[in-house]
Image (tube, rainbow, N blue to C red; front, side):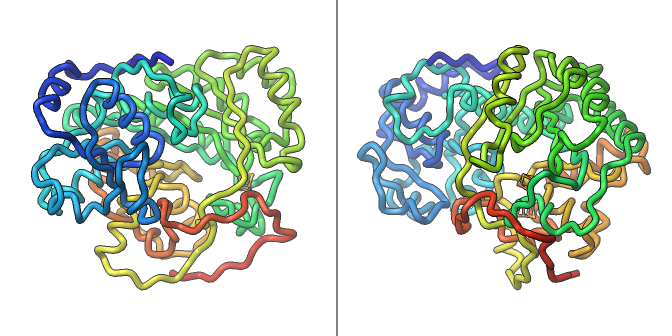
Length: 412
Ligand code: SF4
Ligand code: SF4
């Protein structure tokens, strides 16, 4: 497949020329991004001499004949060879981590991903569909650019708008903690619209706006929210994350017929009872979508008591896949959905500095507050009560249903 990034980068050839003079490079990251980088570099005749990852289950294994080593061994085994960070969105933390290990010859992979012509079938490690591939790499490229220009513009990857605490399913391990709500409520429509306006009038750009819950299709005014958001120009995609249980009516579908709307459907098998009907309708109406069969998750849907050191909390946060997952819930901005819901459930300490009551600030104040929260946070109060979301976290079967709300311990 051919991929050309819509986001500008410096001339990739300059970096390729520089790397071709080295004996080899180390690719940090063995997930989808790492596999794509490894393949693309091989095709560009750059010698990938070793791989590395924070996922300890990969250490000592080989991918395409190349060994995966722990980060601590990079410097001792390979001295000053360049390290290329090829991970989804944790690149700022990995860079800091490598610097802490005395490794400074570090590159992001935007030069690799800016233009790709690769045969995905050659790469078993890549599990993304073509649609997912494009979305993920677009987001990565956007995010690298946002970080490079963070002192000039406030560009954020995404915002999760939690329309409702209600869901048509009650998954016992829901990462957004819906299974803990005993009396779930909707977001107030007027507060929500006011908060959306304030947020989108504050940031320069947001790559993805996501409508979530719970189940966003249970929010009666989901079409009005969509219609309102589509009036803004400073975002690229409006994603609707749904569990495939509810088919929207004709009136709503009309609103969703917009090139920036994308249905991201999690198919949990039989319990996603309307997934086929939904996909058929979206195809008929020419609405972009992806329905992925989901069979397992990370074990993160619980409030836990931990006693980690500060350093460990920084690692948990730094490696978390949603550590810049800005979330709006009941007029407040949080840095991740776990923090939003655990706070909303009053299960953890209310952390004033990490929760932005969006209505309280002027635009200038809010720019500063979001910038600090988004680019400077080292870990959240919520991380102390969270299992973390990285590859070392235990996997559990997805979407096992609870018969009633799950009791939780208040760790505040
Ligand atoms: S994970 Fe399950 S409970 Fe949570 S929002 Fe999705 S469908 Fe609802
Ligand atoms: S609380 Fe921390 S570790 Fe947990 S999901 Fe949020 S950012 Fe990640």
